[in-house]
Image (cartoon, rainbow over all chains, first blue to last red; front, side, top):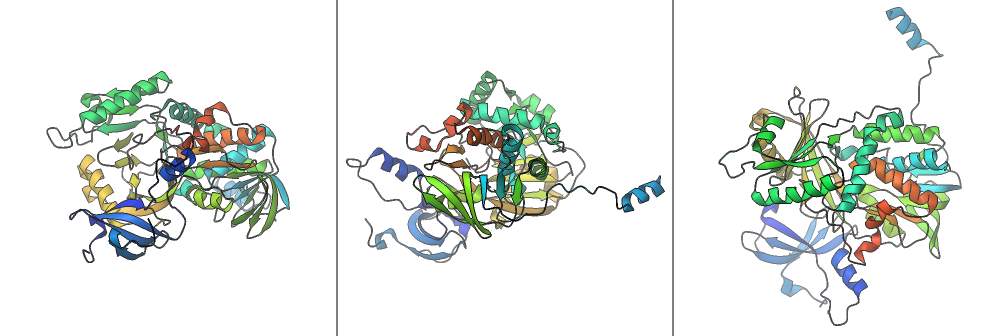
Length: 81
Length: 413
């Protein structure tokens, strides 16, 4: 990890979406996958990039308070495919 | 003369006019419940009452009248969009603004002084040609202008000849303008309440009673209301409110920040936008320079301001007009924008029979206040979506018929 840095060094890539299997996914599920990102008030898991080092990582952030609860490497993502 | 004025002013008979009545008691039911007491909801209420004879209408507002995005936008009115469906719709919106003060018997200070969008690259100029041709085809005043014309339109502009951000030309939209945002909302509210519409401030929707495919009642902090038809027009809260009815909209919420400078003598006669600098400026009738740009770069339900966005907007403004460097900022604020994937709104039917949507207004809602209200009132009164609104249906995301307006502003895109 990079330690505490200024927010303007980071770029948001939006909430994590599950990868779909094109062989079995119906059109309605594709539409949902493409156009409906997580937007509920509460904590979301998002992709972020530290721009100077081009390091992509995950962050849990509260969409109301903007508090970043934790950041972690994509390899530490557990219990999800 | 002064004595007569004093006598008139102190007289008990002086008819102090009350534009917007105090919030009345809630009735157990209304024909139409409009959720959201901003410009769009009030415009819809006005059109229902005046043109469709529907006056059993309650407008529910969680906070105070027009205190959300109606109060927070930067009042741009224009129709220089990209898609024919978008241009046709916003063109009707501009036309309604042209007669709005007469319609409402209330001065909304519509000022049709034109909008100039600047191109700092050949690629931008090419995209302007496409927008201009589509605009002309649909009867709007939109044209590509050269450097000389840009200089004539805005003599104080830094053309940056030979520089990295040299202005190569512009998109001149003579139909563009501004209006007083509060006046638009107050005018609609006054007209609607005069015809019997009830405006309930500090009335928060907390849920819906849904039976089958219908909303039977709206649950609020002041009690339950049975309803014939329901409209959601709650700006930044659209996703949240629709979710209470089980409808998940393709919306992501981002803050949008803006700011104004101290008042200056009139010097800027047009609206000026720069696509490359993500900055636009307009001088208000009070002389303040209103400066806006794109939404924040990540989702958030907050109206906080940030220093980095203010610096970014100031940098763009000072580049275009270097003499602004010593000018002080007076106010800053933000609104929550409900952004759709294709930068077009969602208007029309929802999956529920009597729940209607006027959502997804993102950063582009103010200019559509009259036309969205008019057309949504027509939809609710007749139960049928008029042709002009059909392209904006929620179903377009299921059928992959998106209406791409990304790049139609100087904002985030």
